[in-house]
Image (tube, rainbow, N blue to C red; front, top):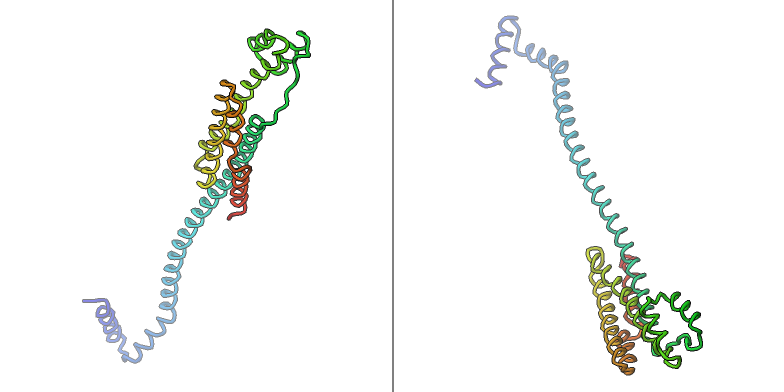
Length: 242
């Protein structure tokens, strides 16, 4: 027997016991429904909506938290990228300046031939020459001292410039995940030109091949300032979100 049949059977008992008609029974049922049924239905509906509402609220809160985490990560990544690109530009300009100063065909040097041994020693110490290199300059005849000084100075300068170029190159490699590919490729292209030019310049210096030394400048800057300017444009566009 289903629920409908069960209810009908109960009402048949009530009708028989009370001796009332079906019409009266329906009236009683209607009044009962008005008093208790509507409240029961409303309670059930409210309970259903409350349960579903809580579930929906929970899901929305989870989604909102996920979006907050994602936005936070994105903001941190953008901040890191901004810092890295700013540093890349700074290191690239430092390397460019150092390479340009070293390789430029027009160089000026201090005339150390006019210095006394005491003054020369003080000067070389200020220039951070080590003891052996200071001795090398001192040992040169006075009319050869400028040549000896420039030879040793060149070695010091080459090492310092190589450090500057390596700092730019290594920083780009280390921070590849935070640098757009077109920018990292441009940085590595520039430092590759610089390293090749420094190698040529060093060979030319050791061989006293002045033509090779002068050619090193064009090797470092095959397109003039174009490559460094292009790097600056790429970084600026990235900052502008392009």
